[in-house]
Structure formats: C-alpha cells, structure tokens
Length: 150
View 1: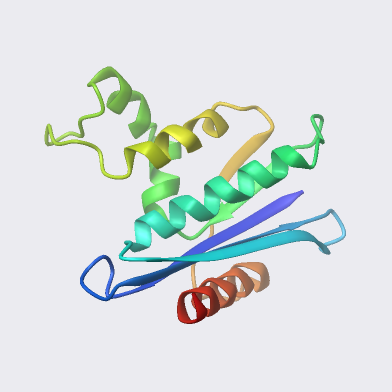
View 2: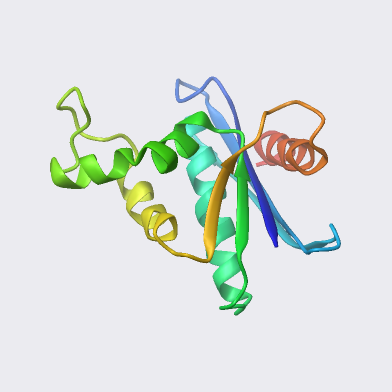
C-alpha cells in the first residue's frame, strides 16, 4: 500500500498562521482506502508535515495489516532527510539537541514518528511537490482546504 502526506500553512508560524495537513492511503490498485485531514492555528509548515505523517502511520496501524509494506511518500525534505540521513539518531544521543546544540524543534512529534522509521513495515520516500504526481497533488489540495476551512 502507498501513503501520501502533505502539510500547508499560511504565515508559517507567525501571528495569524493557519495550518492544514492531509493524508491518503491507497491500495495496490491505486484506489483510496482511507484519508484524513485536519487544521490547527499558529503552526509551522514543518509541524503540519509531521502531523500528516504521524496521523497516516497511526491509521495504517489501525488497518491491522501486519504483513503489509507501507510506502510513505512526502514532499517534505525536512521529514524525509531526517529519515534518510538518520538525524534522529544523533538527536537521541545528544539529548534532543540539534547540530547547533539547540533543542530539536517539534521533538514531541518526532518522538511519535521515529518508531515508524525503524518499523520494517514502513518505508519513506521523497516525492517532488507540485509536480505531476496525482496523489501528492491530491493531498496537497486537501491540506490547503483543511487550512482554509479549519
């Protein structure tokens, strides 16, 4: 199964900021199994991207398909680079401090997502945002709608 996630914000964490997130899980026939979306005030785009991933992974767990491989696609370099470059391992070793010795942003969310990075049933991939990827564009539109209506 494939999972697509996205986040969207206006004002990216500043006064009046609004954020939205969305995900969709599609089966091997490219048909949606389920989707979710939500919104929050005063958040950053990175927060929205993380929440979309977390909510999607939680939902995949609820599907109770322990033998299923979930290919998770995100256009967030922040999230996928953390997975691919294993930033999170250094964060843990360094007491949740980043390379600048500052507290890791969004660490409560990272702590929720990281177990999926080590779960063999989940694989994470970068997809180019705002390109010709149908499902990435679909979740982008749902995230924007959530932001505007939330």
